Image (cartoon, rainbow, N blue to C red; front, side, top):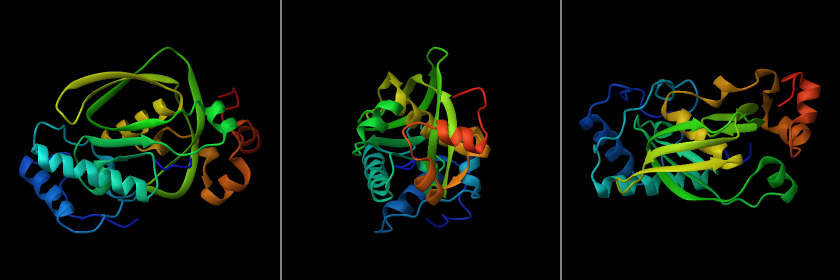
Amino acid sequence: MSADARNEANHDAPLSGASDDQIRELVDHVLDAGVLPPIVQVGHPVLRHRAVPFTGQLDEERLGRLIDLMRRVMHKAPGVGLAAPQLGIPLQLAVLEDNFEVDPLVAAARGREPLPFFAMLNPEYTPLGSAHSAFYEGCLSVNGLQAAVRRPTAVRLDFTAADGTRQQQEFSGWQARIVQHETDHLHGILYLDRAELRSLSSNAEYASRWSQPDISLARQELGFLPGGA
């Protein structure tokens, strides 16, 4: 997920049916390249297939190196989340972190609190309660665009941590949005699939017109979510 709201990977990369050996080969290729890999852009099929669950395909050392690399790619982009398929690796792994300085009014309106770094394997989320909220999102794999997405305001996340322990945590506000966005990536879903398409804006138009703390002006002027967010 981009912080505000690069280039093809191997066209021959296997997708949802990747074997353990193929996963390891892809990971080793990325780790041994000596440079930060490009972020796969929308239109590449790896973003549209459910990623392979992690079942120990990578040993502790490989997994740790991959997580570190993904974190560095996320920071450079910059973004608040990155999923392995965005590097052309069809594995259910994502990294998340949000420590950006945000205007207090924006943070209050969006429920945006700092999110300490963590990696998640095989995540699944469940909405908590019936409350939903809509805000603009961007994606590192959808360069140059942002759109409003209505999502559950709070979720429970079940996932495996990098140390192999199964964990459960609850998230709300912007943290819940990041968790949902990155988990969706691992299931072949992009934020555009859930977006209000009438809200779709270039980064430049978003920055100049719709970057208020909430989406009320954009909703009125662009004609989406007529019943409210």
